[in-house]
Length: 284
Image (cartoon, rainbow, N blue to C red; front, side, top):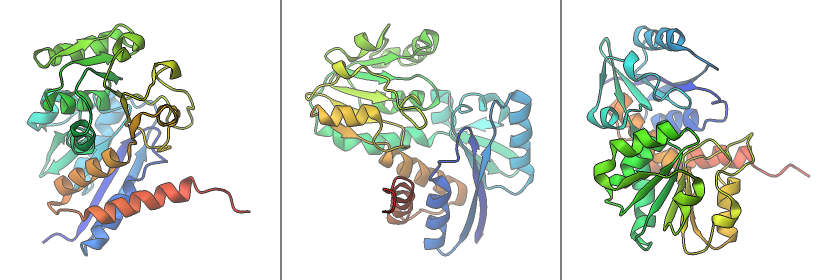
């Protein structure tokens, strides 16, 4: 049985990532060793990405995660796609299978498990999805899998929102022309953009659109309490931070990389420790 694993993350910016702690501590709890390498490259073009992935293939990696802004760009640079990743059109996990690189999407499975209790406890109604990039695509497919009545998708790049709505048109997804149209009378709202993730302190949705009869989720976790979630909670909305999505998606990736089921508590404790250390109040 293999007991040492080299894994990592490709993206930018990723210095804030809690993934190294989650993967390495989950491995330690299982009695194996994992080194999780951050591969932070700004503005990588196609040739840069190809070179990085070739390195992943040749240097003994079990696999790598991929995050913003490369989840879609790597699609045609790898050898094969799992059915879910092929349908979604975005990859956040690449597994090395011999000499082949196979793409998966654990954002979708991770978000589905994170959002299910909130959906089950909330009134049904339209859901607004803000952001149609890599993580937005995964979240859209996850929500569609629950049979939501209407999924309204808005992105600053209207073509991206329209394309994603087209992918899901048989599952009641529509392109919203504005944030206001997407959110009007919505039962729930998900932010799948980097807006509100540090160093940004902006919000993707005007405060006036948030109210107590809706739920609000954010895919970002740096910080856990984004400006959007802080305002939504203050207005009485049920909220979901990016914590469970991050932990669940990492757990699913870990299993793909290693073939081992990670202890949820080890991953959750590692994530919480990173957050506590990063956002602890200054010593007095």
